[in-house]
Image 1 (cartoon, helix red, strand yellow):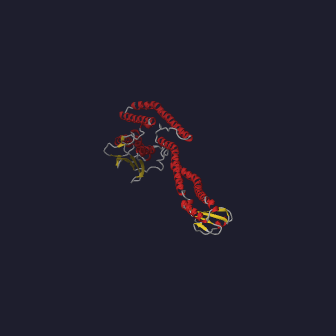
Image 2 (tube, one colour):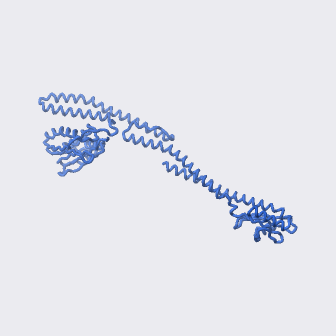
Image 3 (cartoon, rainbow, N blue to C red):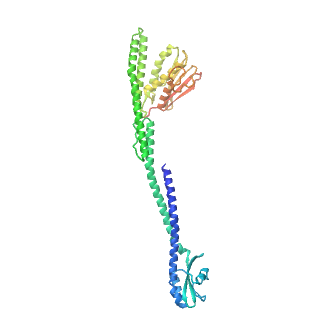
Length: 425
């Protein structure tokens, strides 16, 4: 934008200066020519008394002296045809002046000045002098150069002023863009200082108001989600008491563990909703090997009940990734939950965790019929669920700098790869 404004200022300056300097340059040339003509006319008129009264010898000496002083050729045409001074032929201007009319005429060599001298007893004499082109244009080139330098200087001054004005416009716009990008990156405390023209100050105020409104809405939403804790504590407590009242210790322990896991999940969701900005600079991290091992052990109990064989292949840890523990656990639960939701009982599945370059890759593969189309789309489900499972895993991968990949396994089942990036140092 600054370059365009500078170009516009330069174009306007050039147009204005052209309209001003070109006529001025022509005027300078005209004034120089008129000044030279006036000098030549004055020199020629100084001979009028001599030509009108003196004898030819005296006139010749006076003409030679004037020619030497002025540097211009001077000729005197007497009525009897005698030419004194510079020997030149009679020109139409000289013939016209012989009838008593003084004049100035243009010629190839310059400007011809002729003066009629009356009062001689033998008739009208004529004084002729020639102003050469070099004298007519003396000083014009230097004046034009000075005008050109003045024009360039004025254009440069105009560019500097235009650039300063452009900066007063571009700087607030750049600041607005920077703050908007910070807001897009979840830095909701970013604000812009209103500056520049009134329109830009109004836009800055609107952007600050928008940021404040977003903060208020997020705060209200987080508080509403946090209220779920009070609503869920009572049914969870009742469920825990029911589990502890079972006669079979193994069943009681298993249900109590499930209730503990559910309570941790609810607490994690509430904490994530209220303190989503806990890791604004990407400093969240956890050990993927520990989290995956724990979640596979949890799902192995259900796998045993449904007749599924589980193959677990974990690389030697620790395997740090840029994901919070709760988010990674939710992603692993989503992937394993899909296996149970979309495959019949007895279908075996495999869980592998290893490194691929600088990423940690979690692979979940099963021998079922494959994942239904559209399952990765948020809200889409073919098994009566919420349809958020793969979306949760995908968001966890993208948060860490990785991605979620879906493929078809060698035996036709689903093959899901969760690529997780390393923690940011």
